[in-house]
Length: 471
Image 1 (cartoon, rainbow, N blue to C red):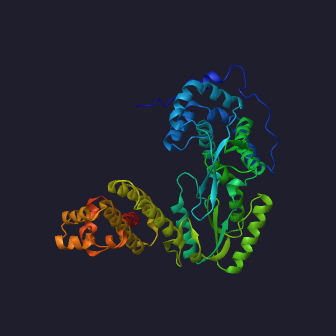
Image 2: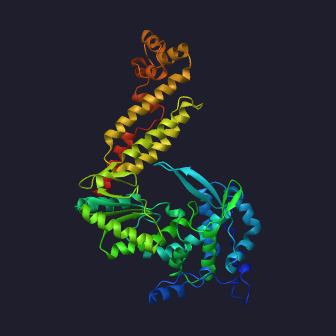
């Protein structure tokens, strides 16, 4: 099936009426006015007509392709990504016209709670598919304007930058002797963003009132919870394409303050680590930054999760930094990986052995690739051994009774007497699966024939590639 992706070729021309400004609507509510420099004034003058770029056919088509590729769940209206094309075929002119006039009204977001890796729940706000399209189109126009002005120490949700770049910078600081980290955790950051403060930061560089008005409407869109629309007066809900960029715009003030004070720091979204040389200096930095965040940005530091400590006592982006800048996998990351594999290999799952192998490979490939910078070969070998034991148990339980299990062991080359010793054991599934005849029937080479990827081997391959690239 082929998709028609150029959905907006004529819509923009139809939306702009000859002889009119194309704006309409009332002025945006007053924004907080920071001290405006001449450079900002020039920037604003150049951005008075950004909405035409947002609503251009090329930009909207690019946004459509991105939303379609990202897929995602339906929003409060129930429309899926698959239904977006049909909706646009009927409403594209209306959509583009409302953008050009500045009258576009976002729908409420769908409130969904998901468990956090470290415990507790995270509140997500899933916009409708159409709102995701508009947010993506706005983000594509705003990002080239704001991103070049962001700090070199900011790595989250930025093109050409990622977690591994942030970790590389962190290990450089530790190797230089900055072994005390001021680990900042912002309490419910995305839920507590002050709309007025955020919009004032956006308005520093954006002069198009139509665009500012629509961004504000996205921030203020209600949240559907259990069929009830709850009004929102703060926060930028996680789940939309625009939220990460808005978060970086707000926290860029923090970056600029840290740079002006000469600190060595790395920020990834709302996770910020500042590296100092002594506990005393760290305590002083923590107090000063807390005062700035609460006084200027109306953000609050989570006192339970934020601390000043040696780098090896803390984790950053799932890694643990050791003395000298060596990276290791954080204990919590290993535990979460094991929990996930334990869930995939549950003995009571009614799936085929091949499908289970496929699910394992899908998870471990991404996990090992992400942690390829860590020194963790021995951990991965032990994890491989544990995982094979789990799989042997699942395969043994699939046989259900003694005779099918004995026949399976014999087919794998186990002598008849030993097969009966293993199959007729009165032990439980786990002990049976780890007895010598079963291990003999399902050695490491057998799992390789079934397609199971060895995490240790995958890690060694990635390390070899990294070393060759480095030379």
